[in-house]
Image (cartoon, rainbow, N blue to C red; front, side, top):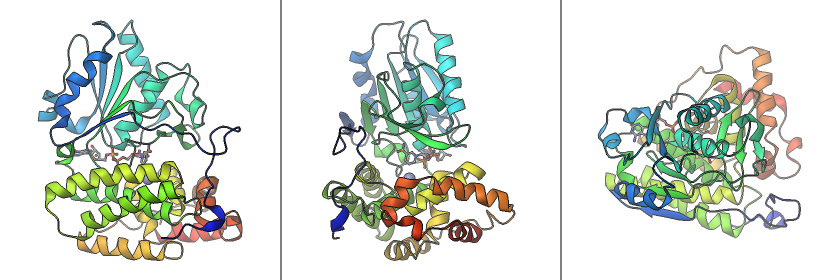
Length: 375
Ligand code: NAD
Ligand code: ZN
């Protein structure tokens, strides 16, 4: 794929003095089947003392499951099971931070998030808010966090979002759905154990996996593309094709999707997502539609913007016999459509990446409403 010449060096610097982004990467990562069992050893040198616990935020799908028995709790460590049924919110982060501060006199030694994007994002945000005053809502945006978060570890149990590698945590706030994008958001340690993804349902595997596929398409087709994002995006796309379009053994497929997620996340770190994500944010904010399925619902109608991507997507849907829900927007009022359109249009960097600086000439509220009406 050729990088679009006029914009090849474009990316959004995080500080006004920067010409190019200087962004953090996860400094330590373990990969491999069964690597979860190294968690206790990894945490030991990070423990400040016996009164400073490790707090584990764990998807409640694992409550009573074998994985929960393997979590290495010692001293006064706390295990908190959290539902991933809804998108994580600033309200939820504030409540968890208050609970942890009330329960312990000391700040925890670390936060460990175990689950999908929902739990990973919650854990990143809780780690930040334990050292930064006030509500999580005050930090939604770019580089509003000024104090280092406490040590935090991410352990994905489903693959696709790239949340394990990104410098953002996407939260539903009182008036917007937006990430806390900061240098302190990125995990200090990630454990990639593909065996942990074993219990995921076929539909959820597909929706979250498609989040990764869509990251690749939006990054590779975007005007912000550069050699850095391209190298990760192409690898992730190749892995997605192997996982979703060929017949490789299940174990291999789990390993490859986990690495696709990682590379997809790295690709958008230095470029941006695009049309599907902008529209999906509108669905998520108004209707609480979850990220993965929301992206799929939108992407199927984006032939105009991503013809090759939509063709591949349709092949994948067919191969895995996925039936996307319909009629999601059929009872919405004009006012509600306007709200979704306003949220989507507010994602300016995404539109600029997708269509270039003159995106407003192509994207009108009427056009976006007509896409939402098909969903
Ligand atoms: P999720 O965390 O919402 O989980 C989806 C479902 O899968 C839940 O019901 C969960 O309980 C279940 N699940 C997870 N692991 C399982 C397992 N091993 N066995 C059985 N069930 C399992 O899913 P997701 O798609 O990974 O995350 C979506 C979230 O990620 C959204 O909130 C989105 O905003 C966020 N996100 C963040 C970033 C980022 O860079 N921070 C990027 C993309 C998406
Ligand atoms: Zn995404």
